[in-house]
Structure formats: structure tokens, C-alpha cells
Length: 380
Image (cartoon, rainbow, N blue to C red; front, side):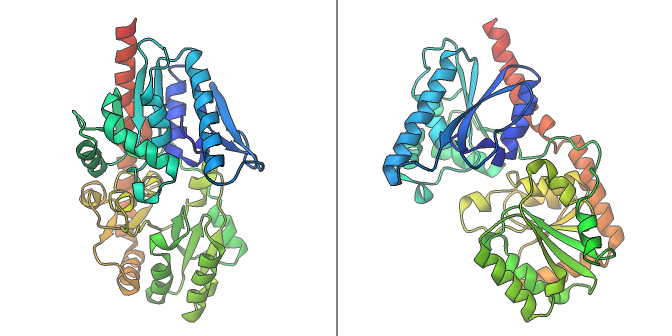
């Protein structure tokens, strides 16, 4: 359960699919009117509607929180053995009571490090509650080793949270590319493709990547798949025009998650730089979906050398890491990788093998599944 709609959170979708193979699963989340209902086989979905008539400001937030809480109560009363809360608001609701359900096991799986500085009034109250009561959870899960240390210390946990990295489900077969036909239609069939997918904003050094294109081979294009503020997109176009590479900068709007991988297939290099302005971006080695998605497809990537990145990506040879990030450094690194196809291909092959062996969600989530199964055995 979480207050945001789960179809924007790939790790939740992966968990739903894994868990639905073993038990009856119910999802409780928020469903704005303009989005389509979540459709997953063998799963019940209870979506708290947030319509256009929602009251503004704190009153609207409170009404939404009450509706969400009631939806959770109804589902728990219907008999639940294990409940997972994915954000501070859902986790706080979950830990406040056992809801009269005997032997209920409560898992708190935090997508992000709770951040009081960037939270609304209700969420701030939830975070403060967690500071005192997160120890009541039967299991705490986070996606990154450094975050596990931070959470264990900040919340005075008796044991370290379990780390489940945000890898995709096992990609047994590389999907057919939707990206390459787009480039063919634009007369760029033979281009070498540098790729970014996900959020399009200033936190990803995209302005510096565009400026770095002056160092790239002349046949290299930069494809950005995802959505973001129109003014930021206009800024990127303006920067591309200033160095006369605008024809080689291409945008693809946000695509459904089940198509994301197909819009990356065919890329030579993925760009996964993330500006470490806050802890959730600094400690992101295991939490970045896109980094593991590129690896699953056998695509080499260029990332920044933040905590944990050397262990997962650098030392394993599945990514090139930068400690200094500016347009010149990025450009030189991209040019070096594009001009060494054998090295880049080997990097991609190692990444693909690491995905099949360990960096897939089934393997990452297996320890949690074993714990849940042990609870069910003890209950029986």
C-alpha cells in the first residue's frame, strides 16, 4: 500500500508480480481520475479516487489521508497475513495498529529516505512517527546499502534493513527495438546512440551532457526518453542550437513502463548521471531503476562515482564512472567509449550476465519472499 499510484513505481509492480505467484495480493493506492486503472493478473486493486473536486491545500490532503486510511482498514479487516507499506504515510498508518488482525506481519519498504525538508504537513507527521516507531515493523526494506546504514542509525533499529536493489524483472529475451525505427524515420539509421531515460530535469546533468556533444563523434545522437518541464526541454534545445548539434538531439515522450526497455534497445551507451544534491540522490547506487535496466539489456553506461557505485558498477566492469562531472569530462568519456566498440560491447556483455545472475528482481526479492514463507509456516 502507498498513497501514490503504484504504476509509477517499478519495484512495486515487480513485487506484485512475484508475490501474486504465491498468494492473493491486494493493492491499495491513490488513483487520480486521469489515469487508467492498474491491470495485473491475480491481483485485487483498491484505488482511492482523487478527483478534480478535491479540496485544495491541507484540507484536501487530510480528506485524502482519511479516505486512504479507511481503504486500508477495509482491506485489513478482510483478512491479511502480511502488509507492505512503501512510503512514510502508508508505513505510519500500518505501524499505528495491528487493525485487530491476529499475527499480522508488517513490512515497511521505503522507496526513499524520508526527508522532512521536502514533505507536506501530513507526511512530516508520518516521518516523525516513524522516527519513534519504525522498530515495530517486522521487516524494513530499502533499495541501497548506504541507505540501510542511514535508516538503521536514524531510526535506532535493532537490525539492519534488508537491501533489495531496484532491478527489473529478469529479461530472458531482449525485446524488439521501438527506438531504431524512430531513428530510421528521421534519417539516422546508422547513428551511434547515446541514451537517457526517465525523469527529464536538472538533477541529471542533462544540460552538461548536451554541451558535451561538441566532443562526440559526428554520427552520435543523444536520445532522451521521458517527461519533464517544458521550460527545461526548451533550455536543452537552446543549448544544442548554441553548439549546432540540435539535429542530433531527439526527444521521446514518456512511454508506458512495459515499453520502456524497447525504447532503449539499440542504444550504444546509457547516461545515468545523477546530481548528488540530496541524500536520496547521493545514496542511489542500488536504487536507480534505469541503471539496472540498461544493464539488463546489455547496454554500457556512464554514471557518477557516488557511494556504492564502484562496488556495483565500476569494479564489476559494467559501467564507466566519473568523479568529476562537467561538459568536457562527460564529452571526453562518451567519445572514448563510442570510439572503442569492443570495450563498450564487453561492458554490455558483463552487465547482461550480472543481470541474469543476480541483478534481477526475482533474485533480489528472494530473501524477503523466504521470510514471508517462514512466517506463513510458523503461522500454520
